[in-house]
Length: 383
Image (cartoon, rainbow, N blue to C red; front, side, top):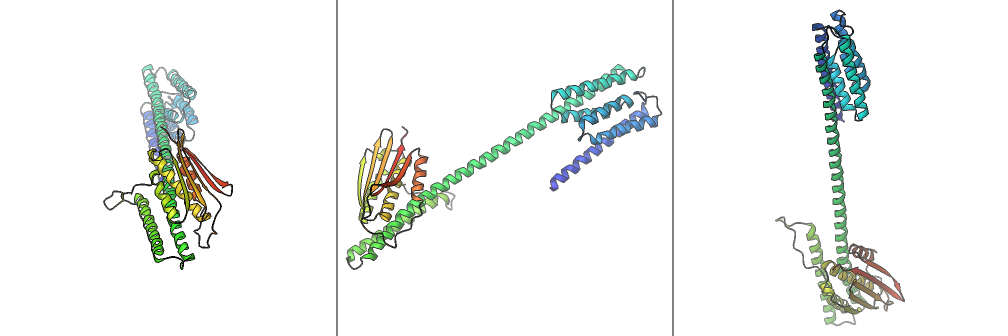
């Protein structure tokens, strides 16, 4: 607000200085020459007063540029005020863009100069009138050039601001996408590992007396291993966000891929799940992003089956076709009742899987199937 008030004050000050200079020049010209115009034979004080009044009209040139220009043209014919006419025509060039308006004011200025020449004879000269006409039309051209440059500068500024806003939106969109990706990775890691820890601990809690020391030790090793792997995977994910002390991002461990499906199934079997794995083709030869999606889909589905259908048989099928990779994960009805200490479900697992699949150009459907639940995914492979 202060900058805007300062700008207005500077414009008004500049206008006042300009008008003062024009009035001074017009008055001096009338006192020295005092022969041209309709009142050229009037006493010098009268001629100077009329010239000064014509110059004062320029104070309103920004608000009414066309009206002031016409009034100054009349004043030019009456008292011969070339300085005022030149400034008025400059303002017209700055204020108007339409060719029709500029042509009309040009014709009017030429007419005013011609009338002044005819009414000033025999003292007026053709050469002087041509000089005045060149000055007036030149100031009109200068004003039009300044206006054009100003329009181009504003257009470039608007374009730069639009590009900046677009870049800002693209950056925000990329940040949102990256946050969503990291959130999916963290959910997959936490949901799977923590669920395995909770289920293993629940199994120890349900039948502690019926287990040997070796089984208890094995369960403890599983809990320790799952917790250690969860911490390692979380550290790798967070390491992407946090640069090291030397400014280099923390190293990342190899991301899970389709070659680790067997190990994933073995881990589920060691916790009591009955998983049937059927792989057709060579998913380990697919691009890394697709392999990671295959592993995460299988991981999330096994985790959901362990939470919501304990003891059920889970059929995990992966088939590589010409049009892409097809996955099907089906579980039957629960063979065991869910315990009160079952891990909570936030409902984001399947949503994250759908987002991950859609980003790869595929589809994922999930819903009840017979007495159980089925998840199907199709991910195209661009060869």
